[in-house]
Image 1 (cartoon, rainbow, N blue to C red):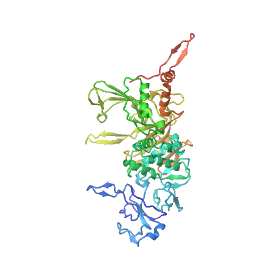
Image 2: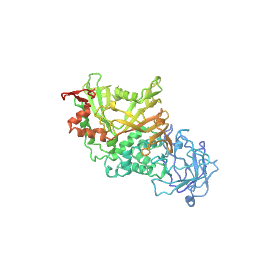
Image 3: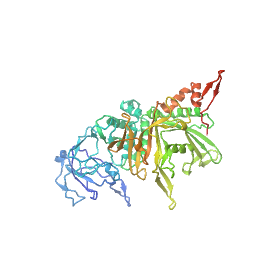
Image 4: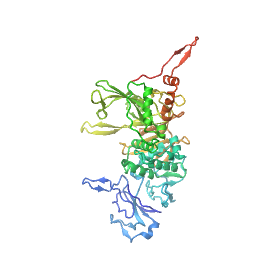
Length: 549
């Protein structure tokens, strides 16, 4: 990442053209040196629309400037620079995204915008005059902007250099009410695990808590999540750059990282996976969950993790293997149809439940055949957590018939998903509870436009957890919308929450309790419907338990 200067106050004097040669940033931030040319040497990385630079005047640095000088990298430039008093700097923010992906700015005025730092209190405020040429984002230093948000928690997030993938996910998980309240009330502090080698020593959790406090303080209309990005980048090198990333991969990393930072298990024992073939499903699920708790226990386990039943069958010898695995998101295949304009979400769920045959890249080792085989795999949901993340698998790989190379393809068909009622009862194999059925309502959508997950632009449409209204977040821009407006070909990650009640550990806590009450467990599992006759006998009318696969 570029090292930015510690400004006091700055006024934009001029804006360079995109066609200008890069000017030397004497006394200011250096250009990123990330791109290699054919000779193997590093070239300055100038991302899309980032070639524009601005000339600023910093009055507090006037006494520190050398004699008048001209920019050595552009001798024809008539602009006089006197670093650090008058110097050229790079623009940071939404300029790096593709053209026309952002909302046009409102009518410009001559009123200066006062910008203050949200997380670095030792730095002086920065005031930057608004741009004179109506260029979106031009003239602004990307720092948190004080103001009143349109609703509690509905704060825009500055794009810090292709960081729209990060902004999109932060906007969605910000409205997971139990987890947000856990951080805002400071309950996370006593559970920070500083010794977990899989965590960050609590730094990611602390940065996220600071971010949430700023979002919900009601003092900012726009926030620059710079600390979040820097802390995450320091522990995950793949995000320590200004490249675009897959929001699904980032979401998985962030939630896993927060979980490990807050893991209540201080010393993890070695635990082997348990083979469940031949065992009763209820017993196998309980024993598998107990093993999981030996290594994983946090607020994210409480609310965002569930369990599914994985059944593998060797196509050669018929050997079977059953395991109960923990999940935090469900990846749903998309099967477009020429006969319909959109893909019903139910079709995606049905395809997920139908099973698949593994390919060579995901072959399973059959201990009987003593080799890897393309096994038949069937995954069935055993239970579902309070917060359910559905990943629409829009990006696939296809082999080019000419070159034989794998080509990445995006499915842009609209998936028609429900907003207020997603009933997963028929897809859940384990016990279901009347006080908290597997019925969900949508509260967030991470959206993508572009050809690949690592390019294009990410936005978010989110139902506010306080006022219940829908807002669309396009980086720093926030506007009112509806849930139905998110049903587009760009919907990528769907965030659902349970409509009624709450089940810790996706209901496994209650299932563990029911082991001590066998009669209660049988009634919940088999859903027996009975009716007494005149002699007091009861006849079983229906058994709702699903058969084993």
